[in-house]
Length: 418
Image 1 (cartoon, rainbow, N blue to C red):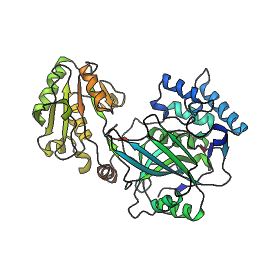
Image 2 (image 1 turned 90 degrees about the vertical axis):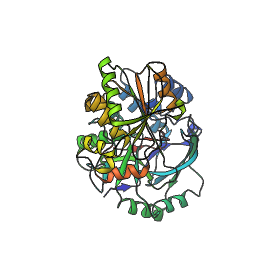
Image 3 (image 1 turned 45 degrees about the vertical axis):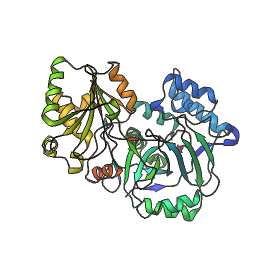
Image 4 (image 1 turned 180 degrees about the vertical axis):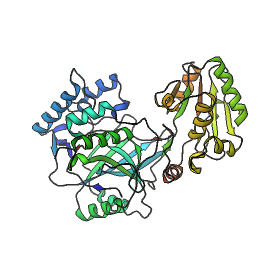
């Protein structure tokens, strides 16, 4: 079972910062140099200064800055443990308005396993050295891992929503228009009800696999028991009506002439090919048999590829569970990337000849500008399918899902040294 607890969080004193708006930031891995400079200019206390530090000794600078902010009272620590409720009002890539709710807590770091914590995607093993060095320096989790749990009876959701009836601790809007609101939940009865149920649940990591690996390595480095055995997570119920998954499209480049021929042959062999009237039709709907939108940079004609028979995928993915064999990402990886083009797991992990695009228009433009040779457009994977694959003990191929919106960095921090 997972071990979920309230935490004595570090957080900004909003009276000193003028609120949350100018001090939060997107996750570090989506911030380029220009965006970082813009965030830094917003406030002398923007979290990017410690989560994405610069300079000759960036990690030492992050530690120094965090210590200084704590000494000055810019960042303070709660006296009593609390859970933190999070509400995100957003419009997804499909333009539909939704509200997603969850909570921030600390979770004990464990080995992956049934009934405890599972990954949902296959990732390159090991922690990111950058995040490990930052954790060593700051002795804190600065951004949460995004995880899912099953709550069919609303045992967690109901007391959490009751706690959110009071005024929010803070509010901030992202550049994509998402409105983030957070509440500190201190009611002992609500905390007990929520944690008792969560401690019976299995957690499925949706985003932040590398940060979890970093937390595991750091916990073992320090050794013994203590706060370093826990990691900051944002937990969202699988039943939450605002929980949505969007696709990540695949792009190919550097194809040799012979690979173009091999690819074309594989498509004709395994898929029914239908010419589309417009590129607007390239986005497939989820269903069976698997369908993929396809366009290349040479002919620039849009096609819909539909798997001729599920037995083709079953043979290529023998040894995998049935829910996995029905994933479009798994079928594409087995029949095309590995089968026709001979890519290895290492090629896929290190993007050798492969690219990803979460935005439909961006993927199409990259092919039409010949920056990539071809694109495969995928359907959103339903939450039920994500759950079925995890329940079967499988991890989906990399970038199978795109959970939107991201949880911003800077809402709260989890100290690891006390």
